[in-house]
Length: 573
Image (cartoon, one colour):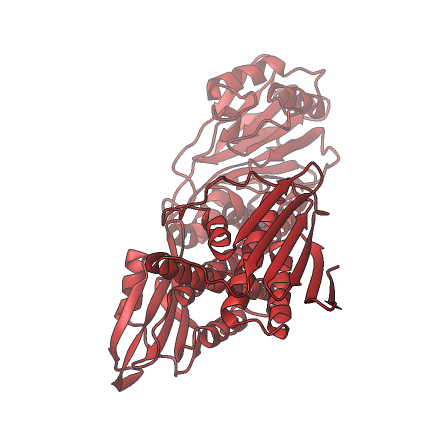
């Protein structure tokens, strides 16, 4: 909380007035202190030159404290006391910041120097300076004669006037930006905030016309304008964007007024290598041109508005990211719900499976559908690509296959029908689907399989092993493909494994098989009468290092297992 006190002391020999202010060591508080000091000095009837000099001194001295206290605690404070006597003005500034070492000599810094101007100004504008740096408290005492003229050269005087003008604009910009930071939080739209910023700049720089535009889809789009109807983009605005440098206007602009000459500035808004927009401010011919302080204010507010654009963009991206993440979670839940439940055996045929996506959702899927009094129909598929698009096409493929239930016992005919129905859509999207389908018909004692460009389906028992590899292309390559159907007798304790190529992807950070031959070899070695499908599934997941969830997959991993118990199926051995 800032506190201010003011008092006057009268004796027979002199009249003294004092003004006291305390507040935090922040730039905003320092601005308040300098305004308060100006008010006190004005009420004390000091000349404008004295008032302006002391206002700058307060601002520079206070800002030094704020800068050197930035790394300290939030409780660092300033204590300012002004005393006016008939002969001089005395300023005493006490602070609790770490302080700094006051240089023995202060010289005018180079134009591109980051600091040093403040101390130089204080040195030039005061007659006496004492700075004591203490362990807990620093004290700066400055004096300036009320009557003595300060002997400075014409060049130094011009430099001081230019610096004074520039610093005044900086402080004005700073105070305005504090106000607009609070306003930005409550701005309903970027257009409303742009309008507010532009109106402030028009008033502060005494401009007649202002236009603020942003880049959208490669073109400049008007966000706000004052003093004119919205005019088409000017060539000089595009030049400012192309060069990313300020461009100066000094000409007739027919779109605004065909007989009037304007002067002004086009300031490009940019961030790193990206151009974001332009800020145009114009004055009519005959008006006072922009001074250094006004130009600095335009650039400061241009940078401030640029940061506001970037901040809003990051907020929107964060919101979109949250929405996308939620949509992925819902899609993953839907995809998981489409996987088949655990069915009771039919005529000794048992089925199980596994599907894990490299992303939260993917293009792999499997399905197992009971055929009453016969056994099961199975399908395993891999849609080209990953993510949402692949998962959507996987759901479409599953739905079409389920609509062809009349052909479950004739896998090749079903596959041809599905391929013809999906060709136009897949061809337009330039994607394809590898699919393997089959029927475990325990009542007939056979397994029927058709394969459209998919990984080999392995059928094995303790004595025999065979594979039904891809015959003819995947679904989506040809409009009317024909697929052969392989029929395999069911022997005692026959097992079937169908899988996707994620099991043999070398990019996986988990364990994987080197090739399809290794998968077939592993499966034939692990098939036994004592291994039901759930036990075989557990062994396969262990071989794939499924428990190591922190290791990423490069591709989806899916497989389906079916087994035929010899006690319920016909034996052909």
